Image (cartoon, rainbow, N blue to C red; front, side, top):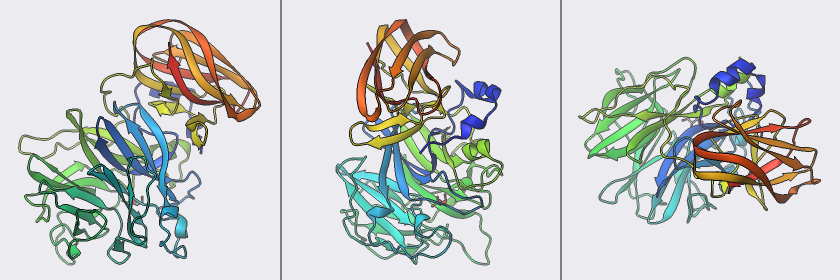
Length: 457
Ligand code: FUB
């Protein structure tokens, strides 16, 4: 579905953002609860998904499925679409009462890899935590146990998994308490009792230095165990505790990020990737670019994380619009999916059986920015897979800014069908070196055409 927020911005504001802004990292959909996973040379960013039509009001979530985005440079993210949904969990009682009912269910997930299989732990809010398994990080995911791994009565949201060096896996979760249990090697059954953590978990009537709320994220680095989580309420910041063991006791170490009234919630996801560390979370920037009313329509952000020599974490400011630096460059001489995007205005993404994921909802003056594209030799032509049920239009290909050097204009004719994909080839004035690439779409109205992939020759 297409998020229309940027069409409401002042042109000057749009121009001010171009080239700098990378937060939120995804703009085509409202995403929350980031759960990044590094597998081989790629970051798989699993997210929950706030629907465009979530009504105004705090806590009024509309969440039906889980999405995944991938990147090899931390700046250009490829939309892989839905990887699982509430429909995967046949056991989840559809009759849940409360706001949103069944449609307020697909909360914060985490996926981990073990022995070449991918285990996606998904809370179905109010009903428990389920687990899905796949042979690929992008699915298809199947429910191997046909029931909840953790029943609904243990504050059962926000699962996170740590596999220790001795192979023992631990599942943690919970709001308002932190719970944990050992998992068997199969990752889909429990190896012991469910325990309420006594250090981080709320201690009624006692001082609460942890301010633990929800959204735990457990990991191990250089022999220390870390438990990051959404802390204080509300708004929520990101706090963290450390321990010498996977089962605690946890010692509160401070904030990774202090709370900020611009966002009622937060939710950490932390990785090490290509020699750097990153923390993901979310804000409400996309929502508030569209309206002054609070809707549960969140947007995933990222910042670089740095550690002190003693393993403690250097506190970060609130989510900066600049995001993080690109690692490496993107090769324009191979097929690139059109849904690989650093920043965009106005477009959406969809999936069909012929093209897989593609960019759609392209109106006149919408654009896509792809960062750090490395023309190692002089490009002569531009090829793109397109379809157009209506008028068609043009793609202006520009370097480095929306008004940057035009290197070509590709005319896309309407071919009467959005399912008929054609490869269009256009001449390019020689382009060389590393540039940010802009595809600026022009034409006489809305829904000009769809774009599946592109490649320079
Ligand atoms: O996204 C729904 C819920 O809000 C998550 O499960 C919590 O962590 C909070 O982000």
